Amino acid sequence: MKLSGVELRRIQMPLVAPFRTSFGTETSRDVLLLRVVTGEAEGWGECVALSGPLYSSEYVDAAADVLSRFLIPALAAHGRLDANAVAPALAPFKGHRMAKAALEMAVLDAELRAEGRSMARELGAVRDRVPCGVSVGIMSSVGELLDAVGGYVDAGYVRVKLKIQPGWDVEPVRAVRERFGDDVLLQVDANTAYTRADTRHLARLDPFGLLLIEQPLDEEDVLGHAELAKVISTPVCLDESITSARAAADAISLGACAIVNVKPGRVGGYLEARRVHDVCAAHGVPVWCGGMLETGLGRAANVALAALPGFTLPGDTSASDRYYRTDITAPFVLEDGHLPVPAAPGIGVEPIPGELEAVTTKTQWLSL
Image (cartoon, rainbow, N blue to C red; front, side, top):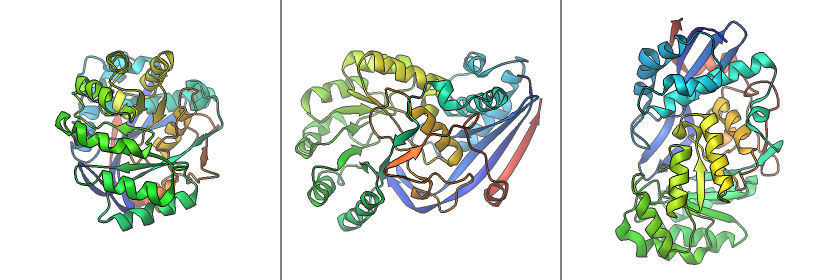
């Protein structure tokens, strides 16, 4: 393909309710979208960076800057290209994986649309629908938490993830387990909120039969996770620490994780996410697809990824109405605890023009 231009579009998406984690509370999503235009087709990409450098060092303004100043011009200089050429072309620029992932997603979408192939087929999907879990933020009270979890269980979600932090961990987990019983698949996510000194405290979660504890320690403390895994019986899952297939292989070799959360934006794109999946599958380590409160564009791509064979645990691929009253695409609707895998060319969905314009705050067109 030959790039003729790229549109950067900022949108503001109000959340149906505040979403609180150990690193902050979000009430809306400031999202950066990319529309890649080629001679054959257009493609959409979604950058999952948050408005501030809290989950990771990346944030939306920086992603928009590095894309417009460095990444897009570098890619345009390659003339004719395909999605597999994106990562090598951008490799000289350090970091900025979420920005790179958005650009790769858009190029891949355009390429597949031009060839009439779906993203699910391209990645190697083996299912036409995927089981869905839900991520439940930190609440102001245990009662509020129980009400929220009850609503998601009634809606049909097959797995519940509770965000935790020091002071909001053992008792909320105990309350959910006692209220909903052992049949509910339950896991927790700390988003790096603990240290090695909290090992004995984290072991207090062992009696609750959790599927996993996700990223309890700092993202750079892979060795600490390996030491923690020797002490607690709850399986350790890594999220922020896994930035590439090589990082996944190293963490597995160290015994730092028994499960891996795969987030395409965090590892630099869907093609690298597939490589993470392949490495984990080769080591017998199950994976699941994480979420970053994506719009329908990113959700469609995540659902396609989650249909690969190694994704044996329900992911954070929730229905659209978990986060947004109105999505910018046709909504993803939960059916019997599952979401359908888009089968149309590319990511399989497109923005609804009116809905997209209603939430757009800024656009920038880069002619190449």
